[in-house]
Amino acid sequence: TGGAVRFGVSMEPELLERFDQVISRKGYTNRSEAIRDLIRDYLVRQEWEEGQEIVGTVTLVYDHHVRDLAEVLTSLQHEHSDRVLATLHIHLDHSNCLEVVAVRGSSGEVQRLADRIIGTRGVKHGRLAATTTGKRLK
Ligand code: NI
Image (cartoon, rainbow, N blue to C red; front, top):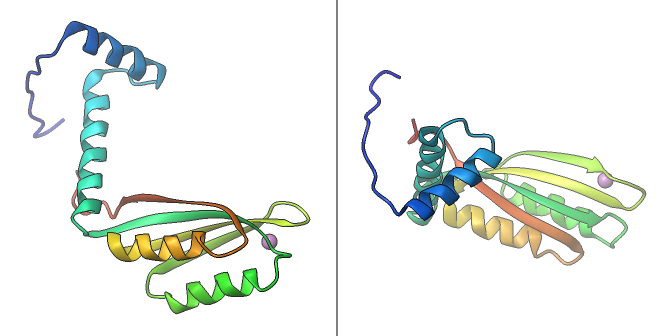
């Protein structure tokens, strides 16, 4: 690829062997691709730690029969409409709803909003998946 730099890395053979086994299971065809992904993941985590603007998704499962829960979750999203990009709602069965809320903001803002959503009484399970805006990554 244009502009790519090659560099050498020394490591214990056992470590490299284990790495090769894992990346082969994951479907990587070469080490460079796997190492690039690891470095990008590391850089994304740095963006998070530095409080930069990030994007993410909050995935939650809740029972919509729980009193006021759906209203509370909707109100929270309206309150933070500048941080909430979109919401996907799926009626899983008679009681359970799956909601995926796409969010954008500083890592602190996004974490606090995710904590409030996930911590709302009646939410059965929730998790924040944080990623990058992509602006700072090649
Ligand atoms: Ni529903």
